[in-house]
Amino acid sequence: MPLIFELLQQMAMIVVIAYLFSKSPAMNYLTGERLRNREKLILYFTFTLFSILGTYTGLPIQGAIANTRAIGAVLAGLIGGPALGVSVGLTAGIHRFSLGGFTAFSCGISTTTEGLIGGLIHLWLMKKNNPEQVFQPAIAFGATFVAEVTQMVLILLLSRPFSDALALVEMIALPMILANSVGAALFISMVRDQKRVRDKVGAMFSSKAFTVADRTLGILSRGFSSESAKEMVEIIRQETGVGAVAITDREKILAFAGIGDDHHRPGNPVVTKWSQLALSENKVVFANGYEDHFQCPLTDDCPIGSVLVVPLQMDQEVVGTISLYEPKTKLFLSINRSFGEGLATLYSHQLLRSRYEEQKSLLVRSELKLIQAQVNPHFLFNALNTIRAVVRKDSDRARDLLLELSNFFRTNLKRTSDTVTLEEEIAHSGAYLEIEKARFGKRLVVEMEIDPQLKGLRVPAFTLQPLIENAVKHGVASLLDQGYIWVRAYQQGRLALIEVEDNAGCYCKPLESQGLGMKLVDKRVKNLYGNEAGLSVECVPQEKTLIRVTIPQDKGQFDDSSADC
Image (cartoon, rainbow, N blue to C red; front, side, top):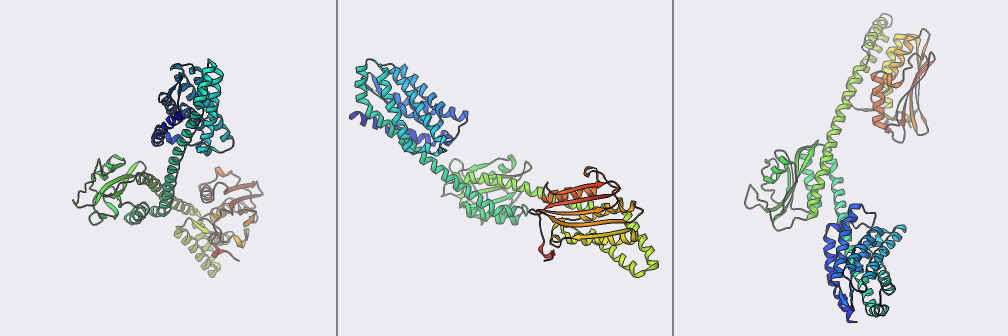
């Protein structure tokens, strides 16, 4: 029995190795799931070193070595699969064979077999969809127990003389089986606990990041200014618990909250060398308070001892910084450093998005102006000639037409919103049609069939009028007989359909060949409601032209105040 105590003394070495391993970069690869080749290579060298070290620290017994070599091979297979386990076991086995002894060959074979056993158990766990079971101490104990029993059997089968092999197994079997099994379980237990701590910290970090993002991203959408920065620094300080937070642009402090706010004030120029370095070189700057102390350029009594400065970027250009500060009496936590860097990246993306939204808004306004300019100048000329002709016969009718013309152009000029209700769009088009009906007289008949439930549907401004104008200009105007225009809005399943149809059938161009006004209507409807929405054209020459606007109702925006109940 003294042998088992001597082997158990090696547990101290296993504990040290497990601790160092849990702190090493190799720990990052222990996910329990499929590993990439580079990760397997790192784990191969790690566990091979562990196995060889187990051989060198073993105890000489009757021409053999009682050792903990099996732990490295079994755990390599258990964590990385058969290929990794066999690779580690084969390398450690060749090393053991090179040391000689009557069990050299059998121990070399058995070490390789132990790696394979760990790998087969790994495959079994993966097949059961239980990758996390790899890090259960009981699994590691059982795998190593089976592997060590197998080793004892192989020693008896392959080592000669058999009598010496039997005597050796009788002496080392129980101590090695127990010591290696307990050692493997202990190793996995420490790795599992460290992994749980990392996962917990990661979850806390993610939770904190989501909370801050949820509370601040809406603020940034209003722009990067002193007002938005003031709100943001308070939120960041609440969530991180750091001593102070500052946000600057390229020249001055936009907002500051926390310790030192009596002399680090909004509006002051950026004077610290760390902020200037972050702005000029576009890099993260960290003064940890030990190797590099924060030295306040404003006063010697400043309580700040450490700082992290992260640049804020927009289109690869530095537009400002976020700075996190800790007092001289407090350690700057690594999680807050990582958090600050991630936060700056998140805000940089949000600033870029804000600029995109601003540019999109400018584009929308430009498109509205372009559509307004698309109103045919001949329409005004024709309208005035029509009114001049009407005024001779019916002055009241002429006055009404002037009012309709005034309303039409007033709406054209005052529209700044990108969307209006269908009811508003019909009213605007109605003013246009009143003038055209006065111009064409009985030659133009307009019929409208509008589902009351769709009156509140929001559509891009100037959606309907260009379609009706197209029906008049390219349809009714070309007919000698009576011209009809039907304007319909109805529901078909989950779709809302808006149609303008004429009985001329004179305009049969495909959508891509249509004029600028029609293309803009199609583009703006798609931008608002997605690619499922948009314009389509159906034409039967000399019979009809039908232009349809399709809007998915599940994506539709409604203004209930405009709808009839």
